[in-house]
Amino acid sequence: ATGVFDRDVDDQQSVRLPELYENGRLGLDLNMVKMTEMMLSALVHSLIIFLVMDLVFFDIDTVHANNYYAFGTSIFTWLVVSMNYRVALITSTINSVFTAAVASSFLMYFLFLLVYCRWQWLSPWMYNVDARMIQEPLFWVGIIAVPALAIMVDSFKAYLLLEFLPDR
Image 1 (cartoon, helix red, strand yellow):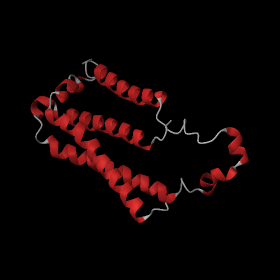
Image 2: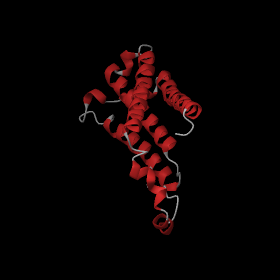
Image 3: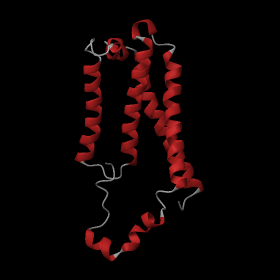
Image 4: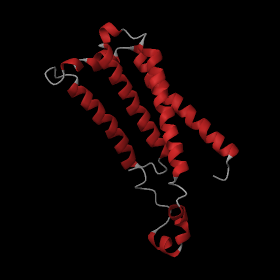
């Protein structure tokens, strides 16, 4: 959905100037190198999430935080935040529809947590996990640290690409 609004030229110009779309026809934007780059980026982002949680988890009060379920819910929450950051980073046309889509992504996730963690008969192990999770200060440290580290890694990667491969 991030590319829906990316329109550089109108329809008449695109028919008159087919060379504008050489990148797509020649596979310059979607090829094995780009796919490998995106897979490595995803791996680095997942490692950031895991390492921050690994560092934080042992200091969280696991007796009151319902350990395994708070761990998984925290990681998934950080994943949702990081995913929305990444979508905002790679989107070139930010408008009201895009903003509503990102906001609805957060809203739907938090509504899911609100429902799933409140009905004990639905999942007894998840009962009140969200309330316990948001009471942990280190959970909030992770909410800030994970996207901040991801931004640093993405910025460093962009710098290296511009410095050593400026024509790319």
